[in-house]
Length: 277
Ligand code: 8IG
Image (cartoon, rainbow, N blue to C red; front, top):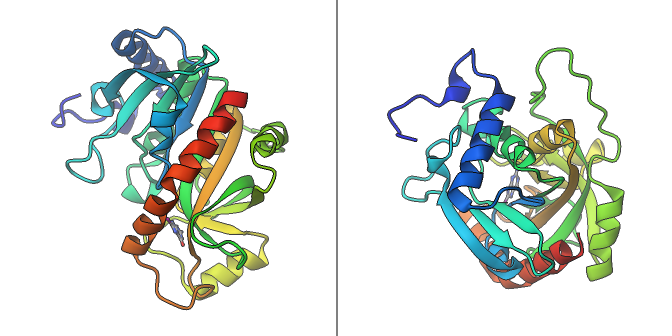
């Protein structure tokens, strides 16, 4: 898509589900893979996993697919990668996440998830880098997401669309993940709007309402994935302790560094988990 054209998702008459089906048809055309079985969104620190999952069949710049915007970080075009898993299934790896804090609205945030569903994917693996509230989690610890609290107070659902969110982060898939690594801890993910990190008081609030992980993604995507009928597996890489839990200020550089150090281990973990799905 040319950067000079408006994103159709920003136009009031666009049906986001019809656009997701259009995007899925383009992915089938561009990758030569008719249907995908599993989709993964790889967040901060998780990128290495793509190389370990299986054989890359095609790697398409996300901007070639309708509804996917230009990257937030210029020069870093996200890709949609089709991977043939050792078990013969096809995985779609989404390396182009639109964050809520970019301010383009929720339709853009969840377009990749809706597109993944339209490619045929029945399982959605959502990963992110995040801050930890539990002091036992040292930077570099991967944890399962057991539930979420959506502090954006926004929603991908439009109109009177009443969607049940019980067991949103599938107990079945968490149990499967623990067959690969029995030591995996889990926690409740709290999505803040961002892009600023929390104040220490906000972290205490998140803790008081039952949160264990703080981040800026995933919850809105999980709601859209559930609406689309997918089964969801969520992983956070704890790259830092949340503000005020750790005694030093948070820095993006520190977060990137922790992600890099953990990359090989969590990539291997994720590849092994995906092999069981
Ligand atoms: I990486 O501490 C990462 N992302 N909101 N808070 C929030 N998002 C994050 C954090 C954090 N670390």
